[in-house]
Image (cartoon, rainbow, N blue to C red):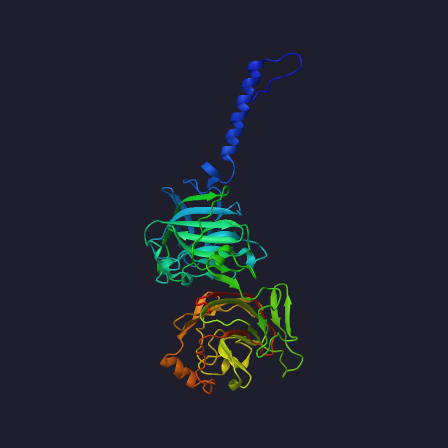
Length: 473
């Protein structure tokens, strides 16, 4: 290209205009051909996939095959390979992602969002939030899984109606809204998952081809198309009434408030709590620091600081809490707790067991494991799900639901591990063979308090919140 000579005395105006037009054309072509293969759409939307090739994407993890045909990205399973991910080269923070997917072969897959791959984390393993694609009978498509990190955050057992949203072997539309700490997922317009979490606020988007365990599953395919990302002028879907998993400690989101959820512990004081048979909290032993409530290990083996009970009584409710164990620790959360002199000064109630199963001897006592983690203590053993327990020192997320018809559920880290109904012949038989046989109508109080147990070990609690299903006068 010849550059015209321009001086202050004389120049050819037509030559200058031609030069400027040619320069602008070159600049436009440069901008159009650069970047990650995205194209802009009206309103600030980005077409992440150009429909022709995989420009702007790269493969991490395993070596599954990714190719483009007929405007679709096709992922094909390969034997003896770990999970594979087709990853955007660019990362994103707040956005609304829309795309279509089709899984004709009933192979598990997923869509990563706000995900990462770092050399110092499991040798670069892809980790982060994932929209689950699960065409199996479990039907958890649209749940949120934390790949290679905390595992299930929102299984569809929290939202049973959403299990019907998937159209097997047909094209489905997925929508992921990430705005601040709020993560929401929709399948074919149906709200399937809602998580509040601030662990990762920015990351790449990826299309997963899951590893396979059987050679005959090699060559099966998952397809994606019409992958659009909105990063400006974000308009979230109006709030709904599905269950919310909030992992930001001691907070209640707007949708939780709309759903009737409130904090049972304020994260700062012991207001609303007291010692059993007292009008005040224990004098010592319970420490509040950085939004965590911890019962400390006493100075001597036979000493205890004392339990904490709510000042308020409850009938039926949905209770959520997080707990963290130290090595060898034992504790529990009791409900339907009553205080009566005939109980010899003890606050008696049904107990969600909190225990270091590996190190505490109580795990091997009782009957068929009914004193292990998350069990209905001394009555019903919790289902032992290998991926359901977090390591000692890590936070566990628990839930106790007492329904108005006396059905009760215990949950641990996304899994329902105990289910029973008070007052049935089976329940009565379980009580009759337990340590509670001496207590008349044990666990059958129409209303009772909630109790955090001091069992002489250091255990921490946070994010204690409740939704009353029956409001007492």
